[in-house]
Image: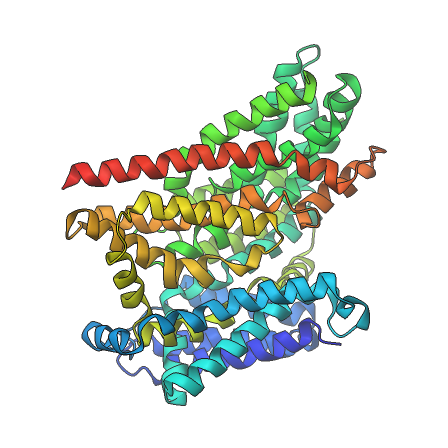
Length: 318
Length: 224
């Protein structure tokens, strides 16, 4: 069965490639820091399950030390000049879009095939890994097409990969680090504490006030944890179920669905949701690492107000 | 009931660390260790929990195997081609382009195709360069502030489209989480009952963010 282990083996190869490309970039004074960082991630993908929890913990500390000591940095990178790119773009034309569209197309066709044909029951792909397996298949397919058609050297492929990896830098592992922080927060009882605090401020008698505290609690807790998934069970237990659904008689489907979406407004406003808010800033080479969060606030706040109104009106008055 | 406030110090550290712009990896690691120690875990246990959590969440980072493909296509002029395409398209503006992308992203997410688009898959290679080309078309060369804003808006549009589209799909993780959380309190719901209630918010998201996108056009127009 194709499961996550297959994907991790491939990811190890790709990250080792980033390490190789970084080490070869002699013009970058930080090339060894970059190479060590990507190689450690390759080791994590290949041998993570063999290292043991303490071993993985030490690996994390070294990654953090490399990033914290500013030993990573982007170099000039070996790539084509803007003029060469213009010429190449004229030469290849719109066909250049094809390999880029192969990845989403593989995800699209693969999802359809998996959900609506007997593929699911064959046990060929682990259902829990299906999205990532399709992504991996799409990447391999797109890479094969690029290699066969554009005919870059193998070295150019490695250099282009590490050029982009180093332009994102340490931010690549930030989402994974935040997920492990979530594990520590849960183990140390942060959720229980927040739930207990919310329970002490619950108002009685005012539905609107209870809705406000529920929605704002979702937003605040989501901003702290970086995703609404950790916040929802806590807020549902503290206020959603006992007050809004049971005591005030709200529509449970609205309380559940729109409560979660209020949390998503929080996701738009926090750097803790790194894969949505911090990584893209690096990926698009923004000057301000909080640039994406900042433009999202003006969408998130009116949208939060809209969600509170939906909760109040559809939850209690329809 | 006595509330143990100490574990919350870790949150304060994260907020302070991010605000003071220390390296976020460092901030998160320090916050994790401090929170664990204050939660009465011995140091080795904290280290093991951190390592275990990191190893279990490797799937989050797998997406970046896409970079060699994007890098190669950029080498051969993908971004330049995306710009040419927009430059030749009549009536293309930043706002209209991103508005179409917002609707597209919401619809494919609602069909369960959440990872068919994304920051690495579509925004960096296609959407952001197209949006920049549209801005340049609107009034020649653009200053750095405008290009930063256009790029940030491209990323933001992908996020808004994803977040306020995906919950319309029945089998998305968050709908299943809502269902199972409420189930544990004896509230029984079907995924369909929940996902229907994601539609009003999705419409509001399209209207609110869409309005901002069209206002961005006006703002860029005024600068010229």
